[in-house]
Every structure is written in structure tokens, then in C-alpha cells.
Image (cartoon, rainbow, N blue to C red; front, side, top):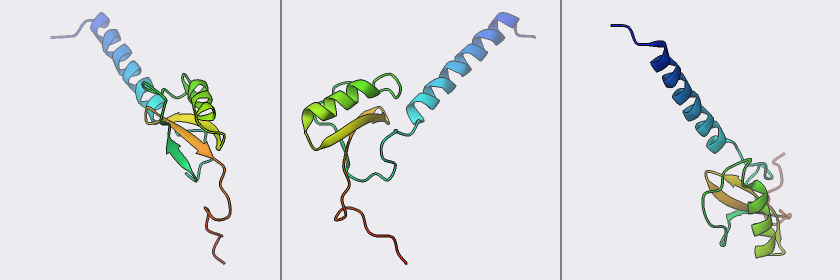
Length: 94
């Protein structure tokens, strides 16, 4: 029994939607990359979707504390980024 072309298109569309969802939620944050002084926002509410909510997350983080430089979405959560200083980051080994 062959499946109809319409069912194949629906399956392809569903697979594409799932793949897009995985890509959007797995995208690394555009933060500082080393995880230095990243912490979850205490006041951001709801799911934080990369590309869609990064600006809202950043504003929330800056409003939370003057120590926060920015914020970005990662793993559906809002992460605030603060400046790293020499006491936070170990010097490179020689």
C-alpha cells in the first residue's frame, strides 16, 4: 500500500518544523562564550527563545542589576552576563 503524496508532504513539513525547533533551542547564546559570570535571570518570566526573546532578556538583565552587561537566551532560559575580571578568570598556563 502506497502512502499518498499529501501524507508525505505533511510528514516532511512536520519533520522540518521539529528540526527548526531543535535548531532554535540548541543555538548557543551570543554571550561571552567562556561562561564567565553567567547566571540565570531572577526576574525574567516565561520561555526564552533564541533570536525571538534575546532583546527582552537583555533588557531584563540590565534592569535587574547595573553589574549585568547583557543577557541572552539559551536552553529556553534567560542568562545574564556580567564582566569578567582577573579574579574570576584563571590566567593561561604557560
